[in-house]
Image (cartoon, rainbow, N blue to C red; front, side, top):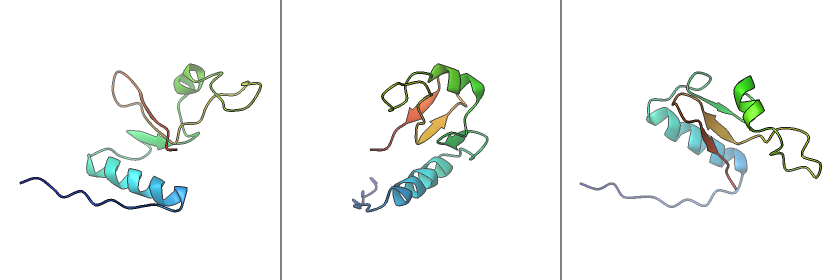
Length: 80
């Protein structure tokens, strides 16, 4: 039987982040092991994202809301 999807309008970014963390955890992923938030990333990810900052001069690395480095291809989640 298909699950019913509940549509929620989030008012705060922190509520969206909490929702995403809960979904990632429900998938069996562990925070700080399988996924991280914002700047809590490895040196490899920082280097890979160098120049992707939203700032005008792009001297820093971009900070995705969530990223998963557990798999052979990293997954970056940017919540807008």
